[in-house]
Image 1 (cartoon, one colour):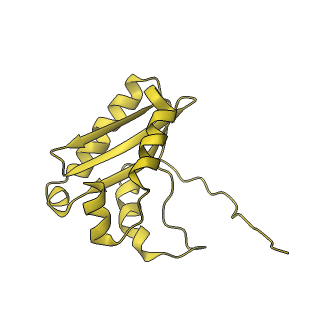
Image 2 (cartoon, one colour; image 1 turned 135 degrees about the vertical axis):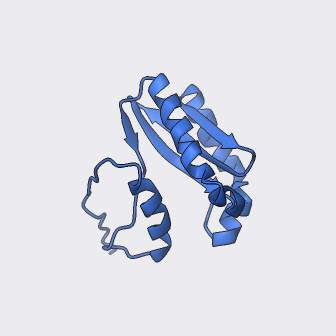
Image 3 (tube, one colour; image 1 turned 60 degrees about the vertical axis):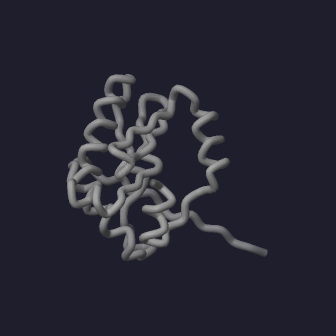
Length: 126
């Protein structure tokens, strides 16, 4: 599902071995919820914060609003596991304009909450 969804929008996804390594490292502090192999997401937990890490939805899922249901189920599971904070892991930022981020930013903002802005990273090569 992740590969098909990423292919539609030409998004990068990590190789399967990297994905599986990540899940293995987090062990019980990682979970995934999918619905009918049409929509799903992975959450990583650290210090009572749930990080919305990987997500995908095929066009059929979007027509049925399944991504919203996936997030609702993820939020309930994160709460059950003792999480106090939900971190969406990024939204559209005008400092680094990428119009492809506007769609999922709208999706994420529809759940409410507040934004935290961090300073950019700066690297100087010599």
